Image 1 (tube, rainbow, N blue to C red):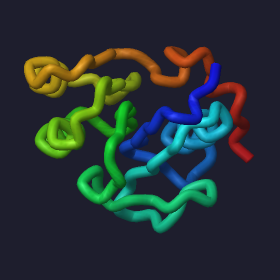
Image 2: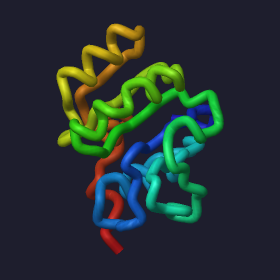
Image 3: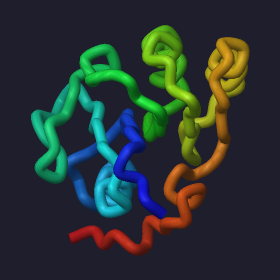
Image 4: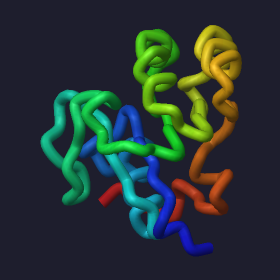
Length: 129
């Protein structure tokens, strides 16, 4: 699959290779996506500039993939809606009915599923080292 034109923001991206927020960055980079890691505590993740919040990510972002707890995700509703992504993935552990309904009511396609699996990748393909 050629994903060179697809852009994805990974909210909750991590510099720790054992975390799913890091595996997602590696997976989408390997698949040819333009990846924007979002984490206010990181300068770069896997050699890619990290952004403190979604508002600083160059636009447009087609896909947003969340790897943050529901309480954090709910604080990001306005930022996500303002970014106008085509779809948002609420990965396992990030699911929130409030977040789901708020985004869906804004016209965004919301999926309660693993973004890696949706794009035929597996976290197990990306080792912790």
